[in-house]
View 1 (cartoon, rainbow, N blue to C red):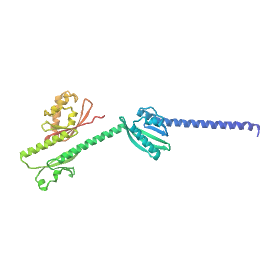
View 2 (cartoon, one colour):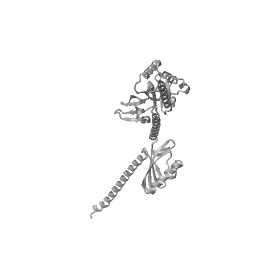
View 3 (cartoon, rainbow, N blue to C red):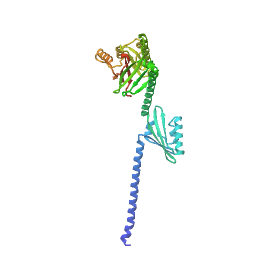
Length: 349
């Protein structure tokens, strides 16, 4: 080995060691940088994260903001954030994860908010809980469920009314298939053949259906009595329906309205008993400030009266009230020239 080799050998070793140390530092720095990015993503993910390892707990910023709490570091501190019933739910499910290594999903109501909590095993001593705020979609679901309950009640009420009609009646589809028939249709053939049959077409969503019903040939007095009985049944039905509905006769007089209709338009019982007509209704609405002011109210009432008198098929209108409410109104032609008003609050919450 010459003199140059003696000098360069330790120098090369030192340089190699230095490069190895530099590479290790750079690699460690990159790993730390990547870990920092991952941690930042977990902190700001839109779903609450709870990481549990033995007695230690790590929660992200989203969880703290979601529940408005300080960051717990122990399992006991985490449980103390909740009332006893929720503590029991969390404790039971987390214990099941540890013993059976299975996941769970629970819906938890906390004050006025609703959360979906999903738990997953991470390893033998670690598990993860994901908290999702489902308050808004849950309210929409509850609203739809309430609407379905109301529709079911209306359906049941109408079915009962249909079955108690004192004459046979049935509805045919556009292709003349029988869709509905009440119990009276099951009378003996002799009785059915002795009736005078009347058919009335009506349209729903551009499809034409036919209501057919039979009338007995009675004396004029009996017919008038039957008409009064049917009219009274219609009025009772209108009063009992849970939706906002009102029945006006062919002469424009208010025959009956539901409680929901009187509440919607703030109509008191005394005024309802005064036998008001269609124009009186609009006067009362204007008097209570429930409709937007118009330049010529007399002309506006005339337009409404003409629309009422000329209606031959169901019409849909929208009423925009000064208080911000939006009312969808169906004007439905009914028996003997009468008209049904069916109002529904379509205000966007």
